Image 1 (tube, rainbow, N blue to C red):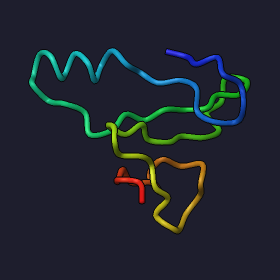
Image 2 (tube, rainbow, N blue to C red):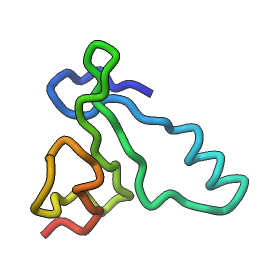
Image 3 (cartoon, one colour):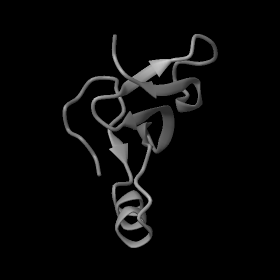
Image 4 (spheres, rainbow, N blue to C red):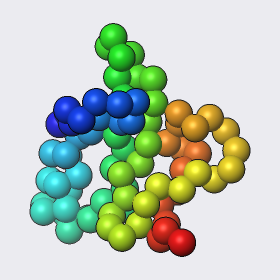
Length: 75
């Protein structure tokens, strides 16, 4: 799926695989990774978190890498 909102955030993610795993294996996704793709190259990834959680930067590493974020409740 691709979002069309513009800006520099992530705009693409695979909604099908996590949904199938949830329905067929009763495994709800804790998070789904989204990407920003520019000229066919991934330049940023971020986690999409289950509401009411939101992506939180862990404090080190690239802000363009989802591995450096965790899902948590906003303060």
